[in-house]
Length: 128
Image (cartoon, rainbow, N blue to C red; front, side, top):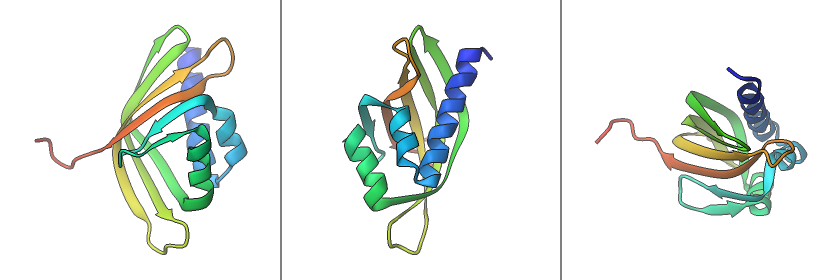
């Protein structure tokens, strides 16, 4: 694995840790200003609405990747794989486990890598 690939996996691990910790400042530092985040529900957030949603509506207990694959193209990178989140709405007692297939696009732009696009769809238990 190249140093750039390891750096991207490390940044994604920091993003996951920031979600679990509720560390919005760290999260903002990782998200590209032009972020578009498509949830498995089909709802779309920009950077501000995504962070506001975490702050007001969602608690995250864990974020775990499986079979993550990374492809680099200059100052762009695509990370995809299966992602399992344990989340609950703020104020709820029960946690939900959400399994998704995720594609992320990261941009380097000559500086730190930032998450530019995120698209998730629900992962089915069995293939059709």
